[in-house]
Image (cartoon, helix red, strand yellow):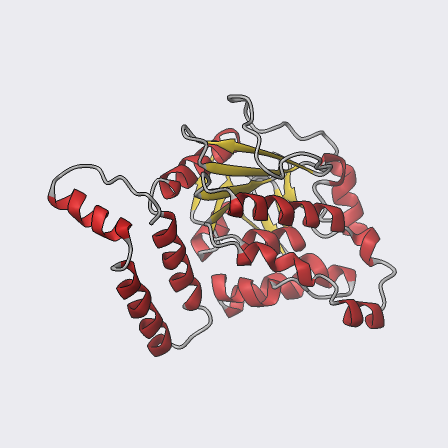
Length: 290
């Protein structure tokens, strides 16, 4: 707790908003948020952007913030124009952890009976690809939230960690499971048992992060990646995401069987036909998500 308080005291500067661009395009559930900012990005408005905006608390993940992220993700999921989503925070912090004030007086009985934190992983149920653009601190719940996304891009000053052990508890939103799968047993054990953080560079070397960018261009680069994904067939992209995620849940034999079934299913889509026809005709494919 003392370490977390010290961290909060050292970094109090307000977060700068995401780089200015065209005026936000409204979408179904984009209004009425207290802890996040949402807008559409990309030349065709096909990228959903969710920015956590609780700067004084370094985007500490209170219940209200998690609920708003879930609402925004589900709204973008239902928006037929959106093909991919970017989740980000500010330049000082992606999210510095769960809101300890909300947890401090919890009891075992209440946690168990209410399924405490069970709604945190709703991000993993979104069929559209989600890219985490991580600047600054991604600690505890913040690291867990980033790992729930499909791709992690990091700013060059980002730091990742699971410091729950320093508060007398353990990760409770997938940290012990997803981190181990991402970086291996030895590094995951070291991070979780010591509470030590790793840099963006170490995170990339360990396989936790895909790419590293300068702080000021990180979100822009994440949007570019999301836009590239969104230009593909949404239905086939969802199949590809399902198949990759299955690799963490199934044996190799079972996973290969699922992959083959999904591969066969693409031949029932108009987009597969259009993609191959466009290739043969040496032109750009026009996908209709059918």
